[in-house]
Amino acid sequence: MNKIAPLSTFVLLIFLLTGCGKTTTISSNMELTGKWELQSIVQNSDTIQKPQLAKGQMPVSLNFKEKGELEGTSSTNILTGFYETAQQNTIQLGGGGTERAETKWGNLFVNALPHVNIYDLKVNRLILYYENDNQMIFSRVQ
Image: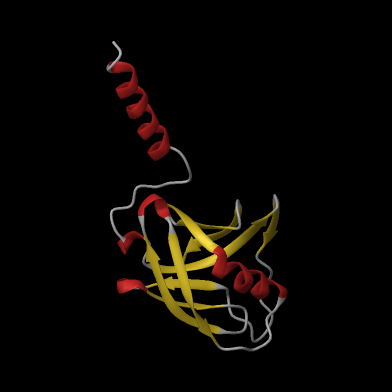
């Protein structure tokens, strides 16, 4: 009996550590690849919806390519960079882009992007989490 209690405690602990959190089992980056357009941002429990595009503005989007390449657009700039995923749906994004003045919507996106650390992938929906539970919610375009 004395040997069973520590073993069962260990098994339960492993189950709890691997079974909690915002995770989706993804076999490869292939499901993440494609173009995603930002629909809303959730900050401190407030939801900010995508505004109407004005003339000369681009939709805010990310295009996850194979081999970790990343392309995207903010409201006024073109972005290029990389992404890397790991266990428990962790993700790291990096790169740069052009430097034209952003709209408020574009600034929210550009300022959040370096802080993204977890993603959740559902059918035609991608959520990028940053700074605790803040979220950028995307819909699949391609």
